[in-house]
Length: 174
Image (cartoon, rainbow, N blue to C red):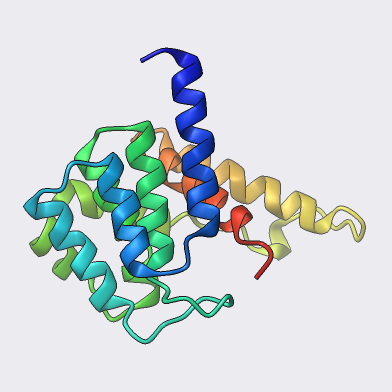
């Protein structure tokens, strides 16, 4: 595919993602990019079930978010574990799912990626250099640095995190 075609496809995908507010359309977007297979379908269903009852500030079901993040990841990478980690990136942090359950259902590689995303440890505020005007900028920079350091072991962590941030920025209106 020509680079111009890829740019146009990405622009369309971003626009579609920005306007997506329901699970059916989110799944359609994902499977228009990523080949539907048993493990991806299982992860989508697991994501939806795990986040059942949770909603975003916009009012849409929470599971729309990880499915759309996975759509962005799938556009950038065909790596199945990375796509699965995008679908499951919030389940340990925001649901009753345990590390053992995630490993049993989706394997050690997916668990490792999800943990790389959920265990990016922020440096405590008391370790930061005091500065009233630049406090949040410093904290943000240190958090981003920690994310980059965690992602060195597997670039998939960085890909998912950046796609997560992109989707969050696309939904700032909520």
